[in-house]
Image (cartoon, rainbow, N blue to C red):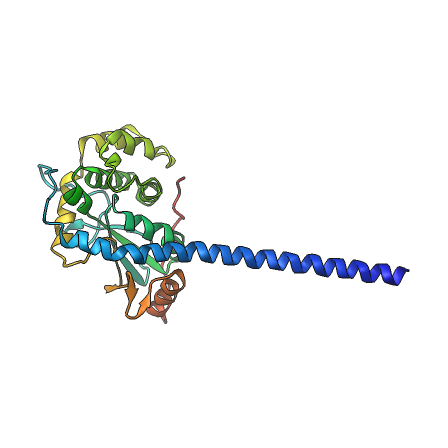
Length: 275
């Protein structure tokens, strides 16, 4: 009887282990499906955004800021129009042009945010963000401009990355100009530890960086880009594909690894914080 009991227990343990492995496999498939679905959404909408960008000179934004372009603290690149996240000495650079009202930009961020931050934190990649206001120009309103100004204000406080992510996680519908309300942008800043300060509020309400944002948008329009988001790895376009390969999480990691082969990783930077 004891041998039969032992065999029964072993069989039960085997069944339990098998069930656990099946559950793990299902969870892996579920996560893959989520990422794949997000990427498909990005690719499906990319052509639409290209049309929007091509027609961006049509209506034009009515939001004309006056005064000199005041770049946010630490802005880099030509005319100080880039906001950098990641180590200065990272071997590869991902250049991203985005509009905070652009739905495909949110699709891109939701699909690749974790991977990009992982590559930043490991010193493999630095990201240079450039901000555009295409949706304001095509649909009217001021949400693209004001959200970009608020993001630049967050850069002044050293919290651009976290606030950038909060804006995309809370993006309204494309036709809803909710980001045109400064109080909405200030309210969202409460999701980033230490960002909601009198200095940040004043910067948002005064439109401190409005002229800088518009200068950035002009650079985008003059750059010959097809739409937002535009993503360039070391100057080569990778969205919605690189050569004949579509952008996926796996491919993005592979492309960065290939670009970094034989190069030293950069200084590791702290992980982005925020809700």
